[in-house]
Length: 88
Image 1 (cartoon, rainbow, N blue to C red):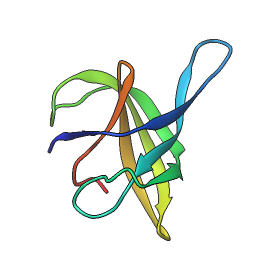
Image 2 (tube, rainbow, N blue to C red):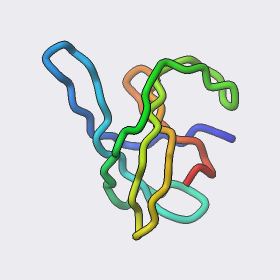
Image 3 (cartoon, rainbow, N blue to C red):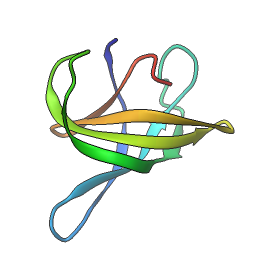
Image 4 (cartoon, rainbow, N blue to C red):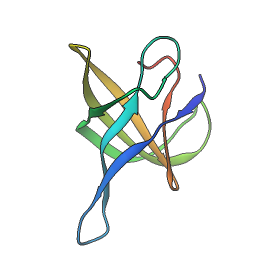
């Protein structure tokens, strides 16, 4: 597994809490950054990512892409956002 960085649109509340609301994805073996999809967050929390290393926020999200609903983990690493290659 490897990190694939993706553009993200976020929401920041009055207390400074950051929540991703959309990411830009594509199709095939790579995330081609072709289309924005809405994220429906089902779980979030600070996690260790053993597969690729690092500690940060993980957002488990339901994504509807091309008529298929799928659960995807979206990670926040400082000011960058990523998913794991092969998750989609």
